[in-house]
Image 1 (cartoon, rainbow, N blue to C red):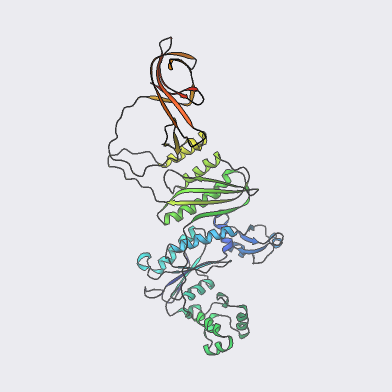
Image 2: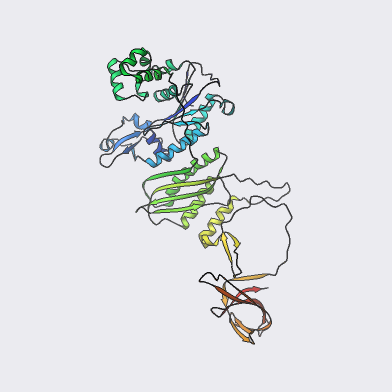
Length: 513
């Protein structure tokens, strides 16, 4: 349970302004740990700089208990046997920052970002959300729950004053805090001056005066304070009293599904890579589920040694949030198209799509599970190739085999009309076509040899002439015949022969039953 702090009566009424401040300290360390859940229970520090001048820039609570402080060198860290040292990743911080803003945006479209390089900090305007999301207490708990699912530890402070919530969440150890209207000054009084954005010059001045807390700043007489340090003194006094007004500047975040993880050591085994991909997919699915969406496609980009990039895209027949299915599809695709070097970083991008729900009739037969289709298609692609799996689509041409293969898609709705039964001649297309030797008599086929057997032509139908693609270099001109022949032993053969008028060659393309 999140520790709560009630500052005065926390019965928030809907009238007026109301802000919720979300704060996550030691953000560089939390960003590198978000996609490494197996390391969260161990002491971890994040270092930055060029070797051998690397220093500690952030650490988790376990490392703080060991006595780690910011600015320690790598040599000093080597004295701790149980400490895990990870390099700072700006890309993972940017990704985590975007995910946190997206999570906050699920509670209100009005968000102001106040983050710096060491901590994540945003203020959410939650005025008027009580009827939709419940009381502020419920909203704060749900916000922290979603942030925790994302793998980040944070705290929330709620107040009528923008700066009161912002200052209190920086200096308090409570997970959830409610500052009652009119109680801003007493709530902020014990906090140190470092929670304010105060210049070093003014901090030194207050230090000489013996001012250490916000309560001491709030107690100073306003006119004398302004006469000594100017209008900045009036602003600091209002901050200490929780009375400074604020013009809200909302941040407009884009919904982008992207996760990046820089691996600690180069990875060559696919199983180790899929462990990290599994965590990324879990984050994706949590985010799209909150928006009542599903994953339509996932693109994995592998940064390899030597600065090469290996990119693959997986797009199932239907959008889905089945994590084991996505993991299996990525595994089968990477097994069929493996990277050519060790992997040093992995980036996952996804496109959201609408959830697929098909309403069947009351007496309709039960269909096979549609999600299994994607795994089956992936296994077939691994055997015959990507270009040989999909749905055939006719091309605008009369050329034989004039079709292309497109990715298979499940239709969005099933037709309720009864199927039309049509009869057609049974035939077998030969791919590739097989050569045949033809004997002509008066420009008509008299006999032909097919598969080392000679057939005398009994009936000949044709010819049918077709040509096309005159605008290309690879033009074609064909002469087609339908023949019925009989061998010496009485065997009958019905086939379609095509003569290439450019190459003067005959081929059997179709056998009729």
